[in-house]
Image (tube, rainbow, N blue to C red; front, side, top):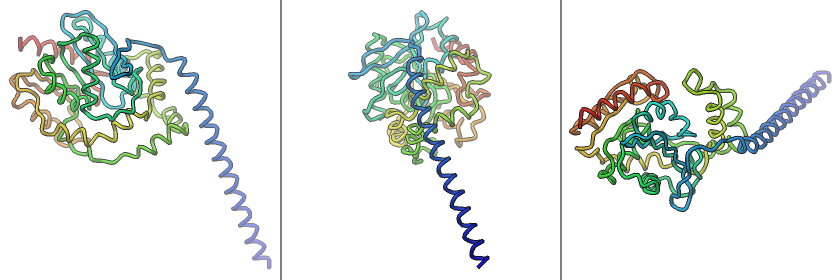
Length: 318
């Protein structure tokens, strides 16, 4: 009898403990959700405008223009760069004394509107071109980071007469491996809606720590990151990774297009990273691959070197 009573007490204690844990978890999730809702609303009012909005496909795309050089450089961001015009700040500051710099923020990025339209390479390229056409920009150096290597490859084949050179900053290559992975997009969206994504970002290390960004810029990037996180555009773009990479697999850069890649010297995440880029320039009349010590976002730390080498490269081919 005493053994049974002891077991009953133990079971009651365990059930009670489980109940307390469940209630605490529900309360915690409720607080996280409410805090996220409040912060979303207050931060929306704190986000400062920059650049200008141009009409593209019935929506508004944000574009930052800086510098008054005779030549124009158009900058395209890598995937998931929440606020491209702010993220490119060190590079824009190095480029703008010599070039007119145009930073494109595709739909779903920065201060551009979101879209439900499929994020196919074709649509993204057409939208970028329409933005430039709206600004009456018809001759430029196209410079892109990361996945812009995929969109840029398609772009220069469609609008070869407008592009005077292509510059890649650790750009993606159609034949690189791992792009057929499936991503838990529904889970990502749930993390954002629940507020847990905000908490994760809050507890994570500052990705801009030690980099040439002032506190105000970093705070704006943080707020825009949370605003754009897993929105319709970037979620659909993620879903289309494999399709978009495959769509450009058979494309090559035009032989007479000046082509220079600034590539991370030690990329352990992608096999044959440097050879893949060397293959892209091997048939180019003016092709060059330069390796740099640094992380994937080379423009965060190597903007001065990138601009110096770009200028030298362009002067050589004149």
